[in-house]
Image (tube, rainbow, N blue to C red; front, side):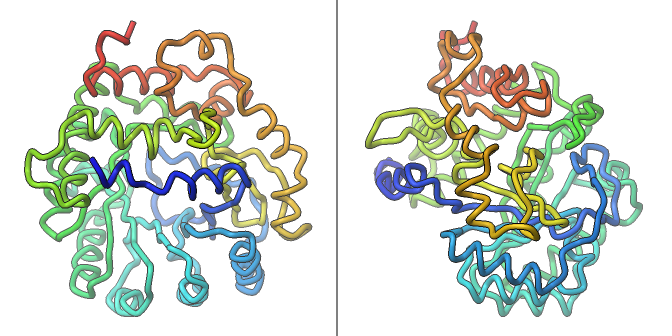
Length: 372
């Protein structure tokens, strides 16, 4: 509990108050060697940024105050210059995450990663066996390749995690996936949020869990998270309870309250979080494909400070639909502007999926009386 309470609220407060772009995603390419059924990516087409252009962007982001950076795609390992970009980014002291399906991750690449500080690899996994995973990715042998990559990273002492989207296709395998990660000394990050495609095609959402499946998954996830919290905080087995997890989520994810002013912050997209696609377009976040500028035309910090779209998003942060304003769970809801935008075409709209997820989570955390 004390570790949760001691989170540096003033530091977090200052980031939000000053709109510092402290966390970003760089989509290095929209090309991919897999065709995963839930993929939200929609490529508008164009010429990918060259190495020298990405290097300039990395320097601009460091100057702007960015601390956390993800290299993603598409599949970033399809970029021949990825080692150079990784070395440059770690040399600028970013806390860096490489998000990959790991099919192309071989022994020389794993050895190269071993020498890079402040780096973690996130590997996308969709089942605990080849049949489920390969069917979902559309490539036979993708599970075996990813499993080999995990072993290579483990043998080279490269930190990695499994990144798991959970839907109707793999709910029965979440325990097995957790065991797969644990067998290699790693953890898994689970999420039941499945977004429409970035062109607002709703096809991926058909894979979402139904209400009963969502509640079942959240029961598993919260128990899994409690185990992780015990390890992170040094508490003994059984030393933490669901109230501790609720507090952790409230401070770090669901309700990052602005301590000094006691004002709500509903979404970091466009105020502390950003994304840049392979063609230089800047988005409020990786799931929020609203183009607010382009780094080939303007400096990043100029876009961040002066983009009319970003300024509008920040001004309208407290503007909520009536359904949200009158909701008894508003103080517990991680309102997602990206979901609103993709579902309804309007950033301030009511998101049925965000609401459904919040109500299910609150119920699982032991506040059934608040769920109508």
